[in-house]
Image 1 (cartoon, rainbow, N blue to C red):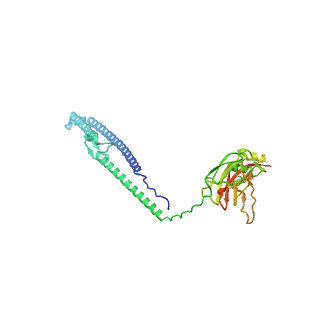
Image 2 (cartoon, one colour):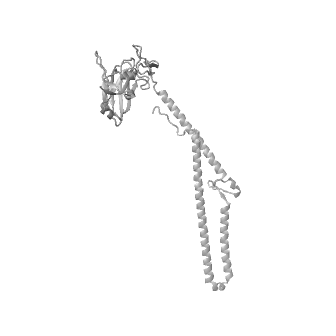
Image 3 (cartoon, rainbow, N blue to C red):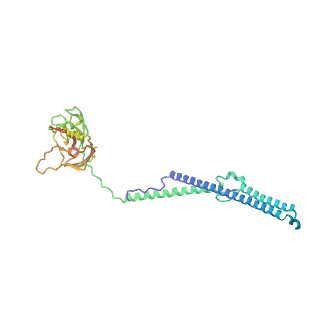
Length: 360
């Protein structure tokens, strides 16, 4: 698929080296386990042979004793003496012990490599390590180095192939057209002092000061509807959002959609006291205290449409008023609000607020 880089199976030479060392360690462990199994097998064979030799000796002794007792009188008749029979018995037992002693000496003196099965003189015991001779260990090391080099080469080939594929895909991809930069509809931020609360406000858009005084957005919202007065201080202003960055993207112009999460656990208590929740909107280009909606607006609360402000009819002036959303909100959960707006000029000249009011 286009745009998806092909990752090599080997990440880097250091990873390959670590994996080769791990493989060498596993091989050495397996070799050690095989050596221990071989030793146990040889020990079992030696014990079996010793037991068979002892059993044979016992059988020979029993047979000799039976023959000497059974043919004691007849041995003189055939020209054999008692001493000769016992002499032959001693000769057989001594020969058997000699053969067994030779076997033990050959087993204990020789050094046999587990790889090439070649026998070495005990004087070269220092060249043996873990049951392997010096030649076999050198061959194993050279083989591991060769495998490591092969893996590095294969990983480099795969990486080069992946780079070539990405280069071809980038060359074949169509070039994106250059987007035209939209004009900015705001000036630099300026600090203005409110005539009512004496608080400073940093606004991207400087409003039209008709009488030379400035009124901040919270104070304008309080004076907007005297018949539905907001609660005092911060209790009345639940949420205030100026439709400017970072609330909306920098290039926002005519359309925008914002989402709000609102938690109001005391909503039922407020409604029993006769209080309501309203949505108000104002124009930031002036200091008027009038309600001002954009060209069209739709608001959903918890998946249900709370209200809709339709576009004004041609030749008619629309009467804008705050909207009440108390019936669409819930107190036992987090309320999810979605607001979709459209304006003919720019939405960055508006501010929207959710307020708590007390109807008169």
